[in-house]
Amino acid sequence: MLAITHPAPDLMELAIRPDPVADAGQILVGVRAAGLNRADLHQRAGKYPAPPGWPADIPGLEYAGEVRSLGAGVKRWQIGDRVMGLVGGGAHAECVVVNEREAIAVPTEMSYADAAAIPEAFLTAWDALVFRGRAVDGDRVLVHAIGSGVGTAATQLGRELDLAIIGTSRSADKLERCRALGMVHGVLTSDSDWPARVGDPVQVIIDTLGATALEQNLALLAPKGRLVVLGTMTGGRAPGLDLSLVLRKRLTIVGTAMRVRSLEERIDLVARFVERVLPMFVDGRLKPVVDRVVPMRQIETAHQAMKQNETFGKVVLVW
Amino acid sequence: MLAITHPAPDLMELAIRPDPVADAGQILVGVRAAGLNRADLHQRAGKYPAPPGWPADIPGLEYAGEVRSLGAGVKRWQIGDRVMGLVGGGAHAECVVVNEREAIAVPTEMSYADAAAIPEAFLTAWDALVFRGRAVDGDRVLVHAIGSGVGTAATQLGRELDLAIIGTSRSADKLERCRALGMVHGVLTSDSDWPARVGDPVQVIIDTLGATALEQNLALLAPKGRLVVLGTMTGGRAPGLDLSLVLRKRLTIVGTAMRVRSLEERIDLVARFVERVLPMFVDGRLKPVVDRVVPMRQIETAHQAMKQNETFGKVVLVW
Image (cartoon, rainbow over all chains, first blue to last red; front, side, top):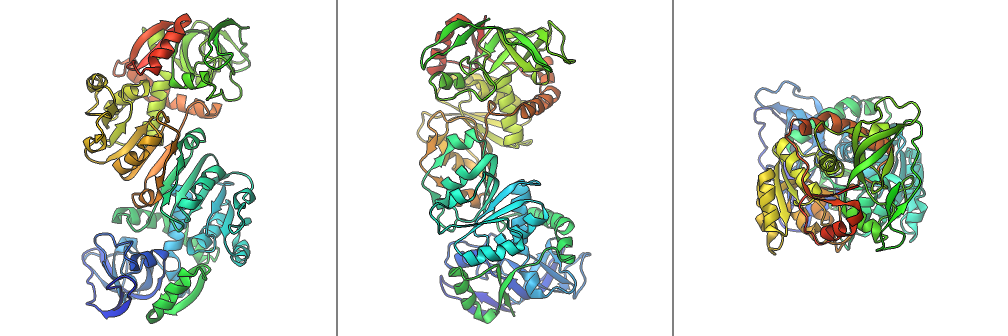
């Protein structure tokens, strides 16, 4: 198979690799499209190695494609079925092997490019809102970097879950586009007094900014509020933490990441997602937001676009 | 009624105040004994004011005594019943008024002095272990200041819940006494390399130290570990927070406090406690740890003993 590899930091090559083989309970998927994630940029820079059990030098955390072969005992899928899902690495290749229970059926009539934009964004956003953030009906939820894949997914999910989604972005245009997705209030972080513009306290914050926003985030939370940290775009080490405030307001700070989860955890989350969220793609209430579709061999262009924060929603790579 | 008051920081007086009156759904309790808490020291210093709805200048967060009068509609209690419980303030007085549903029956044959040592220590420890920390069977749980009221309660509860309680203290003697209560491993925090002596990573930390221990606490947590912050004895502002670590290990930092909880929250916790924990006092599996019983008019002595960290378990004041 062909695969993107990064033999050294900042270097990406198209390599020929042996096809992986589906073991018992696994399926081999022919990848047709694969989402790009900020984690791929970190991995390429040598800062975010793949967890054990996944290809060490092939990036890519999500895929959509068709089932090409079945390992022993596989019952859920047949050859030719259209599937999508998360992997711990290796999706920017012509094939991936996954456990049959972590694959998700692609809704009929949805393109592979659209499907590949779903897994990381929507599983992450849903898990962050519902399980990490425990957002419930009517909660005000602040989502940083609202124009990202996770942000645009959280906006739509929030709308369907009756949450009031407040978004931040450095781009007025992205805020405007998120309003059309259901965001109730947008805040430009280029304003130095952006925290004041959030308005009333929020019950949940979905944060990808990290260090520089920590103090403001904690100040914006209502009593018993939850800060869900998904990323550290502005830095990993915050200059301080007001534990007295955390105690007094009974706040929760919770870090989360998809990639490091065990197979059992992924399977559990996927099962719930298939029951609760997938039907909303089938009936059209949720739509993946695809900024652009880029041929796999132009992956360098895709990386640069993401690095420049030019993109709204997801960048998808196709073979 | 007589009541301890603190008309100004560092000043404590015995004052005569009008008896409070039980409104509908409330009971008036004649206080026979009341636990002392570190929060009383903070309140006295002017740093921890009572929440709205509670006496502003009478300290005391827990009581044991007998029901003296019933507000309209009270069904659960009769005059003369022996009760104990939490209050947001005012327990260092001859009477308190509480909602009938937040009072807990004192087990038959238990003294008021022992009963007054239960509510803050055991409700806080149980809530921290089970609901905030989500400790489950077999978890390793690090409890700082293991010789405190909350620490000795957590040790016994941990033993009954099949948790492995690891305790820290600056006193070898307190560690030894906690071993007898079920602590499986003790760590002297006077050793500068105390974190290395904790051993394997822990799933939960019950922390009353705060700022200076934050970095070590996060390092000691296993993946998906929970740091429950109950106090900030070493300072309220930590010099930094490694959010990358929080994300990578998927850690949770949660602050909690009893005093600021709403009536509904207190009633809910008490109902669960009565069902799950109270029976263990009745059958003798749990025992409040009372360091000393001090007459209310010698409260200054009691404050000083707590300030010097001389005490093991609870200090109880009696009229």
